[in-house]
Image 1 (cartoon, rainbow, N blue to C red):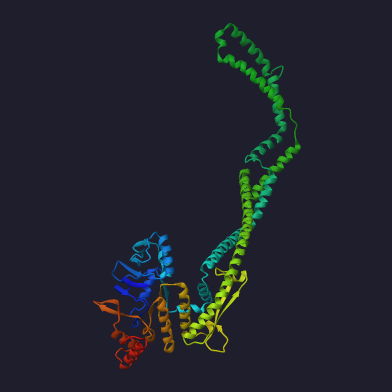
Image 2: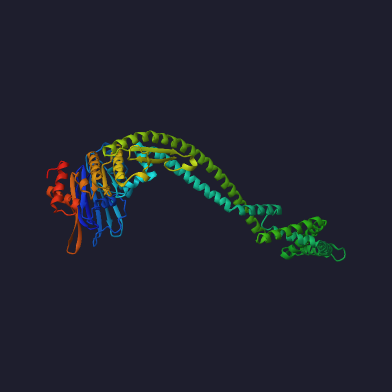
Length: 566
């Protein structure tokens, strides 16, 4: 339960300390007095609001802190786990202090028992310590999704739902990836065809290196000039080896004379010129031998045609694919092969994803079957409990829960495959119809409180906070709602903002919210009412005027019926 709340520099509050009793606490006041300040501060404390603009004008920071007493064993177990995960020592008999501080630049800090924690830790604490319901939260019963969530909470399907949600997220993630991969395959289908042509064309060219065009052009030039080549070789051989004027004919006597000179002149024998003369003769003989061998070839007209055709095909491919030279053709070919291989890899990935999805789908269907059976079993129990609670509030209802299990394609969701409808009739003999179609505001208020009361017994939550959950009702219905809230507060603390005197009269502690203007500044204040002040406030709530004798007498009568001495 909430023992105290401390609010500092928050909205129109400079500093406020509010204490609560362990059962039903009521906050009332004039319209515009700021009765919802407790709800707003708690939403801020647990990170449900960003806190923009909440700091009191002229201040540098604002803060909200609350002191809790965790009474139930279930709450203590939940808290112990959160404390352990955040490295905070926790003694079961000690109070829990939660605090949030926000600065003018919008930065927030969270603390649990004076230890700094992250926002997530504070958010997790909320589920164990408080349950906050706003003015329109009774409308949650209208939504089929909310009805299903309520049934699951009653059935304690949290673990199973977590498992199903995990599988759902895995399937959704894989389906999303599969669609992206398939789209990518579709996007490159044109490129795939083009790449196939590129690979086929380049492979037919049998290009062996990026210099193939140079090599082919050189061979083409040789074959096209074969007659000239033979003439040049023949003329060269003749110049070297002609018996009349060949180089060797004259070079041989020259070398012979130089040898004789070397025999008689040792200095000449040592010169480079003598050695070069001998080398020159050897080189010329080698050149002659090479030319004689090189001249031994025949003209290959077929080869000439092949080379011309291959060069034409290379040039044609270069023009076709807008590249220059065999190197760029080879680069284009390699790129095309990589892209084609990537398409094949993508297609394999699609198949792999489909296999994984099918495996997860089997697990999802199995878990959904178990969840459906648990829901069916719990629905029959919940129907009886709600009818019994409503009967105690003056309604003789028919309440049924319709569960419709859909096939995978239609019903696949993070909550399984079930559709849920709450069916209701407040009139005996009338068939129940969807709750959203037939329930009045008063019936929704009573029904929501009954359901909260039922779930609360299983949940073991510490405190319920209601912001005018009784709006839109009056008369006997208001009495029934007040009694229901009182019954809930016998198990768990209730803090309620209300405008109804009938509801407020059930409170164990009645707090009055009001505003004061001091030196031109507005301040929101809260004080606990004395017995006399409470009579006046109940009278004001009844008639709008606290000093009405009739209203005052009526207020005293109501409070006496509730067992209060006035």
